[in-house]
Length: 114
Image 1: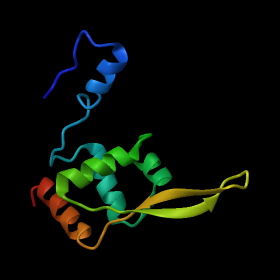
Image 2: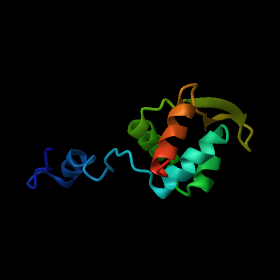
Image 3: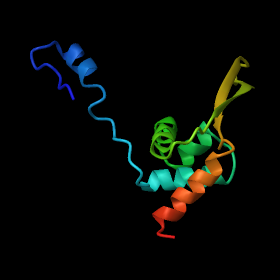
């Protein structure tokens, strides 16, 4: 892993080290990944719903971790809507792909020691 150059300008150091603080991909369920897994197993969830369930301001990062750790697709469907203004807008809704449900259920069972 390349460490940031200490003599580089601060903006360059930030760009060089941007991924140093990112959590590694693991196959261990954190409490948020548990909540995310169970939420997705119960049906499609919007970004706003996942923000409340996890709770986090960046549910997409936890979806990324779940995808990477267990080889899941977890597609994000684009839902058209209108804002209060009323301008056209959209939001994302995550759901489990066909094979994801079985993989995720198996991973949860293994994490419980079943």
